[in-house]
Length: 349
Image (cartoon, rainbow, N blue to C red; front, top):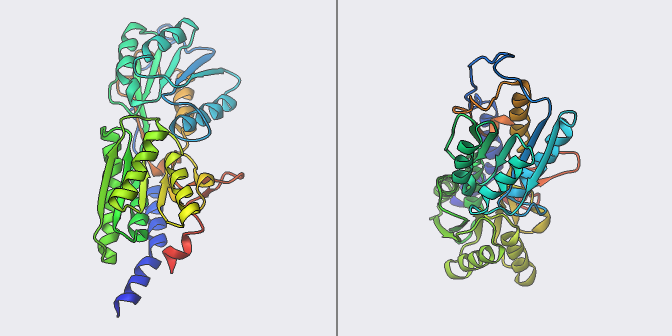
């Protein structure tokens, strides 16, 4: 079999491989949440008649990105549990500002507080000691206390699938990643993306090199754009994934394509970004935080979770939970565009 035919067959298998891996993940046993087993009695603990839950975001809620995805989740569970749930949110809360925001929320009577950034971990943990009757849940961290649990919807599986596609599509063999911070979560995603790209590169006879730029901010559209520009212009990168809470990298790649015809493949981050770059967005990662929030708050309302038994509560939701999906666009009927139709013929041909 000649090399051209072999390459065509391999590329034609890519979408099938991706879909097959998703099916495998979906049928795998879900990761378990450590649920407290200590029994509460009516005399020792009475669940709140009304749950008041506050959400703290590191970035603006905007129209997309990490904080926006959490806000979509908040709105969904507010509608779901409207009979007994009241919610609020605070956006663009820095690490330094977290403690005072928590103080204000506790004074306002909120009995459940979700802090949604790794930067919020230490101040949330400190305030959990100060307010032992308030329940805290921190996203993406590792510190827990009797009244503080943790949760996360991890996307390393999806980044691996994105990497497979990046490795198939790249013409230069240079793959890029723009990282907010190189904390364990982000490093895990970089590694998964790189492994996928390099595995596909080996199959197709490509020498794949991965370049990473850390910008030192969760939300900084200008830095993200300049990092993407550097990857493209200095390192000849033509496929980029990223962890930054804006669409600036997608818009940069779309503008480059529109103005010059240069194709840079992009994988959107944590929310649907296809509409910002229909000529450049291949796929991406999607999170439905409402799946986790609905479970947590139902257990708070029923008394399963209390301010003294959250020490071992740690949600780790993956592709098999319904909270994590491969895709770059959500249609009005709720279905997901897993791969941009523009690139499906390229991947199949």
